[in-house]
Image 1: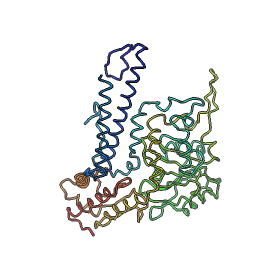
Image 2: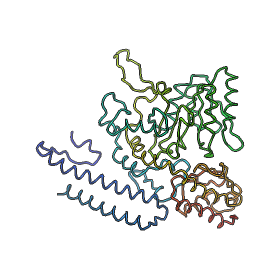
Image 3: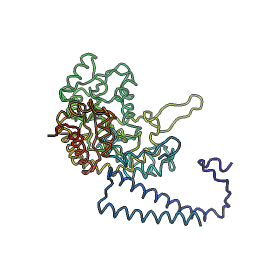
Image 4: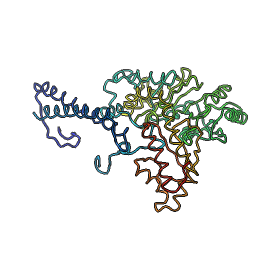
Length: 86
Length: 392
């Protein structure tokens, strides 16, 4: 039965007509990429936390890198919002 | 902060400078973390596995090329990924050692080398360390001669660490391999503390097997590692299955017996592979790592009553210190007793030492930035002064 193996998320069983799948996959593709990109950007920030521990005092180049990554992260989160909530 | 249930987030690396002696070389690179995110599912590398259905033949992701690159990296002919160095030892002992046969180890060998011998019914014979806790070629030759005299034939294997886990001292691998070569005794090089953090050339060292640890020194998740060998021994240690089911007549293709078929099928091998370009590059920066190690060992040595038990100057980032005459003296009257040192270090953002240790303890500075190493060195001096110890 659909919905039982959903990782515990409890989402309901949904039937998607074959004709709609290509459209859904196109949307999902962008959302999936945005989720991975977001995780990767956050991972870069995590590694920065490691290399600057324990005081996390950043130099100018590191701060610039953080700004770039946060901007990129916002774009990815926007894409997730657009693709999944439209 | 919890992931779920009772599982807490591990943020030691993000919040502290971690000096844990076994954790430093296995810290993941950003690319390895990303690989773990994407390949965390069980058999995730098997999406495009086709005939002949073996890990080292998979082209997408490019595990086939990665295996070749690993062999080249340590200058051997053939390599396989294994679930930790210990499984590399075991594959070799299972191949070469029969019950009752003596196997040469050293007085500083890791316990897993002993277990690998035990699992075959072999008998360990240790090469003694000298007064400086080093294993020399001369001592290896003497042990080999004694074993041959007693047993009447050369032992089937000699296993030696390049750098041992107790002192982080460098041992005379080339000279030991030369001594073993005089009796045609194959040599297994344990590179758990070298492969992935400093340059290793198996053929130049004259060894027959190179074993490395992914989670100890190759910035990879546990359990992971590498077993590399020469063309001469590859056919033996990586021999393929010949067994057949008596009822079903099933056979099992080209699965390798000692590897138990495929070894690392998901996040472990992908983490190892994603870190590999960085690992290949970082071994060239070993001298910088040693400079950081020396900054910290110099700071400790400057505290009156402290001795560095590892060889000096440091040739590895893993170091054993004796603070019985310094920090342990403070601990006797401090209200926090032996925990004062780890507590004082934690106050300064430093962790990873055995809690309560103030006598003999180990630390590892591998992977620290220069700024972090200077912070650690300054912290030890400061804690000593604050507690009335003399700093030279």
